Length: 246
Image 1 (cartoon, rainbow, N blue to C red):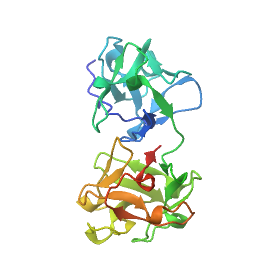
Image 2: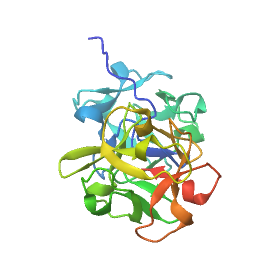
Image 3: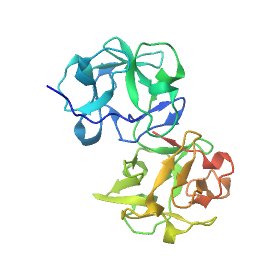
Image 4: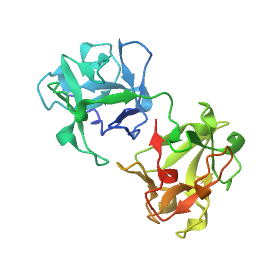
């Protein structure tokens, strides 16, 4: 039967070369060394047509327990199925680079680091982007806080380039307040509306930039304290603008 599953586009909640890539919000199904990787809509990461040839696309497909959906997380950082490795096509680092199956070769394009949850980590502070008290109050400015795995720190970067958080059964979007494009614009949560001030690029250099403004998600004053506020600021290479989406 011909499969028409979605190609996985650098989409598992893993990091390649240290860069978070949670486009479709996939997660490792369990802590086991061998098992399925589930993604959007409860579908499984799958080797198309169970074909072990180099370049075979890796897609999402209805979970069926076959070998094409059994992945081994190796101690060497590889993730393998059908005797070959999960591989970033052409060793690309851009958003949208396809993932395929390929002969294991020890390259960085085949090195993956499983991460727990979907937190957006700022390595400089060691803290996570946090919706204060998991509030659903529209317009609440976001902060950094000790990573705790809570709902207020569980972010998904979806195919519309939104960063969403679901608290109390309500899904909200990270939003540039009042569509601001100037330094100091507050990063808030707001009802998702599809506007460009709610679209974000997760970049290979570790920054998160607003599609509308081009500005970087920034921890105010390079603070590392719990409760430090998050805003938009001109990208400057500072460590307070570095984020990892788990």
